[in-house]
Image (cartoon, rainbow, N blue to C red; front, top):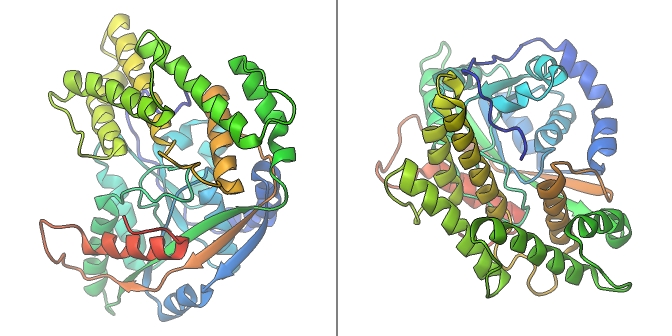
Length: 397
């Protein structure tokens, strides 16, 4: 389980507004992305759209999809291309991973948001950044790392609210101005043959799971064997034994078992109609605050921490979309799945094959300061989703 829960009272981390560190980091960013994540090529489509918004002096929100760990750094590469530094909203836990990140991230324009509760400081910082048009602001509207480039998760309401609040503030500025949103589609592609690059990690995973793979076994078949073995491991922990049926049905049953048990205790009802991530967030909000106060005994601390580990597993299971490898899966889908295996088993992912990232900038969306159609879906988020799906080549939800 990765350290994504910080067991201490939340203290907001504001961004630094200087430019020295962004300038220095931009010099090593391409090397860092190549060495750490294997990204070697970049393509930029419709840069002129955001360039026009910059030239007009608009307050700008950039809303990318979020499918890989390096998305924030990849957006930093876009800032270099535009010769304009960005601000970024980032989960508080990333500031707590090590002293280097704690020091560097704010100086690169990243500020914290608390995922386990309301964070008025983050909202105010976001609104001020956009309203004053100091720099473009990057917010990942899905609100979490989805790990699948061919799936777009539900967009969170908060990003639309921030955009409208900034538009109201900017409309009353002297002189008044506009706020615009540019959706940004990030599409990653594998360059070169996949199997030679992933063979070492496949052998490592099979060794951990005690799977014997005969020479010449197709990569997809090996991936399916690993998926079944990992699921069996989790089923034995939660059901007591391996379950019958297809891998898809078994995954869904295990996911619901975990969430139902936790929702029954912490929420008093079940939320089957909501996304897994919404259910996970509700559970964390119920469990985490008491842990951060440090006034419970060890038994209760350990019990709650065990529930957080179960929630983490539910998130892992949700990151394996049903039927994602049906038909003839692309090298990208196979790579994503193998990387998820590696991360779920070792908490680490290393680069395996060279990657190319394509940035497609969406059309400027002028933000209306008032929300239309209250009680229905947010029109801002509907349009962001429409543009992202179109640019990523995904079917309508």
